[in-house]
Length: 327
Image (cartoon, rainbow, N blue to C red; front, side, top):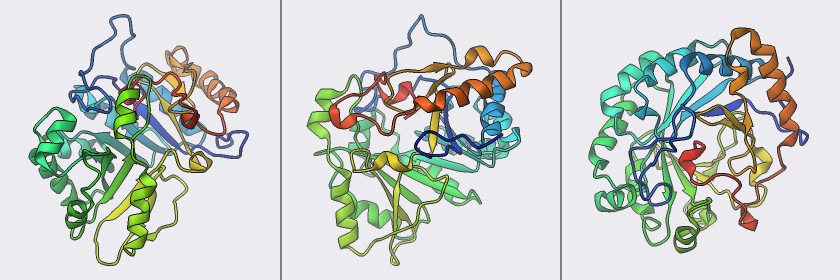
């Protein structure tokens, strides 16, 4: 089977799979009032359904998988999900994005199950600011879990921080101190407008390129982008053990290098985080004999992927908040 490619020549070796829409944080930019389940919504994919889904995507060239949520650790069977995912032939990189609340207690279990890359959301190194953003005073424990991960042989440990004007956008010096002796990747993510955060977006959006300019003026150098890398433009500096990545969705040509697809917790394929529609795949996940149908369904839809998102026009598609699609 040929690798999955769209009409613009982009290939997709990278899948982001949400395993649950629920989250135990109340981040101001995502779920400020907490998660509220839709009583009419279907439950998340089962282990068998996840296995069949991943087999279909690996048939089409996917080899990097990121488990997301909501918050994936809310699922009690997360270690089992990681284990079945790692066992799918063709999956060579198994990553996860988490808020880190269970990291210090579950890291060993997750690594034993096959996890070999982790991103932890840490929007501030200031305890008060972190609590203000997330609704939880958990920074110390989360950073302890991050240090535990750095002490292992895990190939990739990264942090994610959403930039918020007048909240955490002046913390670069503190972050640089943190990165000086830690071999960790830090991702600064530009705040994105979603279906239900427009007032917040208008108050707190700051262009990530502003921070990028500061880095370049301070001697940070751009690194080449790997074929299966995420959307960050990555920088390094000889004086720092850590690296910094900038995710700037409002920058020119941001979508040119798109290499990832998304599947929601209930099995809908999303060709773009801010797409106008979802493509139900769950009906192809009920039996092993449906693999060919699944592959054809995915391959037959890739031609509908747009060349870019429409965030500049204020169009956010069917994404009410980032937890709903896996960020």
